Image (cartoon, rainbow, N blue to C red; front, side, top):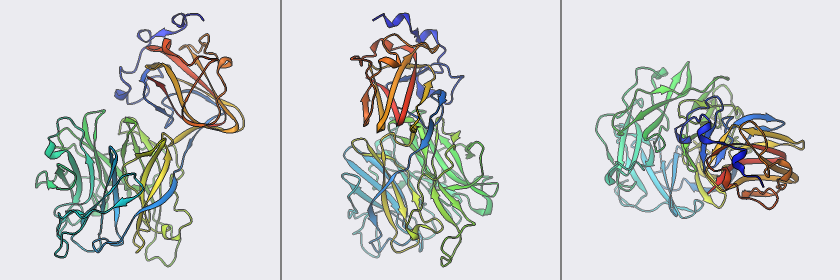
Length: 482
C-alpha cells in the first residue's frame, strides 16, 4: 500500500482551533481539531461538516428499579434533590429528606453497585433525641444554615484534604443567598464561612424568589474553576444562571446562560453535570414546568412537569435543539402533577457499557421515591439512519490512536461503513469505503477494519476526515483508540 504520508496533510499544515480539544468552546470555521483518543459524541453539529439522509436523534433512558423510598421518620413527601457520585467501587448519594416542617435535613445513602442502596446509621445529627439516623446536615429552624444541598467531590489538586468535599445550599426565608459548606469525607460538614458565598443578586429574582431550587455546583477540571448553576427568573419565566469561582469563596455575579432561540419555557432543577467520559462537556437535565396545564382535576394545584436535555461545550452557550422530552411522566398517574418528577445531577457508570441517572417521582405523595434511569454509555444522542442509506462527513480531525472504535447498534439488515479521507475529501488509498468491512451488530467498542487492516497508526498526528455511511443503524460515538 502507498505510504499514507503522501495523501494526508500534517497537523502543522492545518489551522487547528486549539492544541487540546478541552480548550475549544465552539467551532472555528470547521478547521482541523485535535481530538486525541477521547470519545466523540454526537450531541450537536460541532463535529459534522456535511449530513445527508441522517439525523441526530435524542435517546431516552430506560426507567429501571426503585432504589430508595421514604421510610424514615425524618423523611416526608417532599423528599427530593438527589446527588449521586461514584468513588471507585462505591456509589454515594445525598438527598433532601423533608421540606414540610423545619428544620430541614440532608440524608445520605450508599451502594456497591448503584442498584441496591442502604441508609447507614451515622451518629452525626440529632433527630428527636437520637443520632441513630443517616442525616449529615441540619438547616436550623430559619434555614440559616442552608438547605437542598448539592454535594460534589472536589478534584481540584489545590483543595486541602479538610475541604475535599464541598456543597452549596440556599439560605434565608426566601432562599435569598447561597452558602458554601466543606467536609473531609462528605459526612461531617461545616460552613466555609458565615457570610454567603453568592449573595442576593440585584436581578433575576422576580416574585421575590432568588435561589428557591436545587442549585448545582462542581469543580470544572477542564477549565480549572468552580461553576454553579442557579435558579433565576427572566421575563417572568424560571430560568438558569451561572456563576464561577477560582477559590469557592468568591464568585462572579450570576448571569443567565444562553439557551439560543426557540420557545421560552420554565426550566429549573437544572441537574447540570460534567460528563465523566468527557470532562470538557457539560450536560443538563432540567425540569420543564408547564404551569397552565392540569392533568388531574383533583390535585390541589395546576402544572405538570417533564425532563428535557441540553448540552454545552463551554458552559455558557447551551444547545437546546431537542425540544422533545428526555423523560416523560409515563403511565403512572402520580407523576402527572406539578413538580412530580426530577432528575438529580450525577450521570455515573453502573456496568459495562451502561450509565445511570437517578430521578425522584411521586413528589408530594406518601410514595415519593427514587428510581434509576439507565442509558447506554455515550448513548445520549445517536447519529441515526432509517432503512434508507445516509452519510455524514466530519470536519478535519487530528487523531492520537492506532485504531478506530465505534459505539453502534444496527438492525439485522443495517450496517455502518467508514472511509478515511484527506482534508480535501479525497479517499486515502486502502481506507476507501469499498474496502471497509460492513459492520453490523450492537457493540460499544467495535473496531473498524478495511480488509484485514485495522491499524490506522499512520494517521496519527495528521488531519483526516471520516465519512460514515449508515443504514438502519445508530452511531453513538467514536474514538481513535490508543
